Length: 176
Image 1 (tube, rainbow, N blue to C red):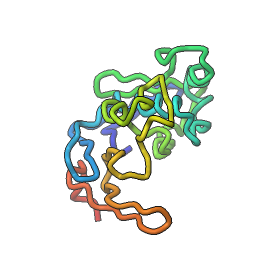
Image 2: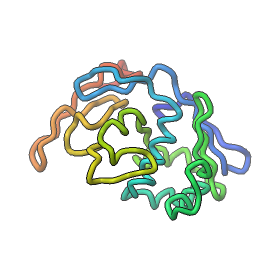
Image 3: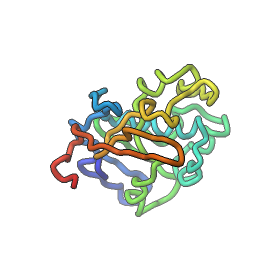
């Protein structure tokens, strides 16, 4: 919801469209602007989740057209029902899901910047995931991009989690 200016479904609620807001920025944990959040980032996020077999992929695996078959190696990514069209990300579902918009709070549907992801090691390439050579999303806050109200500025396992305001957040005036 925060990254979309508006969203809607078709009459049967088996296709959902989210119009991604312009001006939302990706930033590093050092508050350096990396680029603008795009609809394509949501497609990348889903493919990365499928490739890396995210622990929460089961929430959407059988819900999004072609996702289970992609994960089983039966079809290519182009057959999966997550597409970007300009500033719109379109999800085609296997059945009507009138509450799909509320599912967008699940991290499994979060965006990922492709250039940043693939820059985190050879194993981070879409379609060729290898955890042993990919550092994306590790415990190092610099291996993650941020687009929310906060960035992870310090992380020490079982000891310290420090967040800082994201000064480039699109709605910073409403972060309290």
